[in-house]
Length: 90
Image: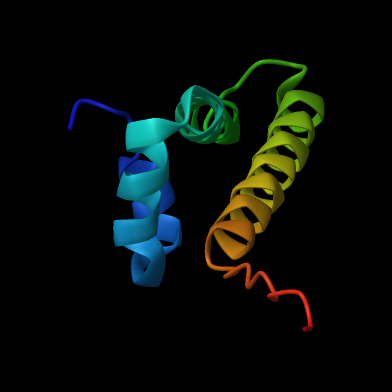
């Protein structure tokens, strides 16, 4: 698969198969994983920056990474829910 899910699978290794499955069928989930990876790259960039705005930008990136992490976690939890339809009573 050519989806950028590596970072998500590194953070959620027990859910690697679910991540691949969701990414294969859900454009929004693929974009979420890509955004997660990009946000972490930016976080690492600002972490080592010597720019005056380093602390502010790093904090923003940390917040973004955490938000995206929570969204991915919620998507993974939803994917593992099994819906059982009850038959009508006779």
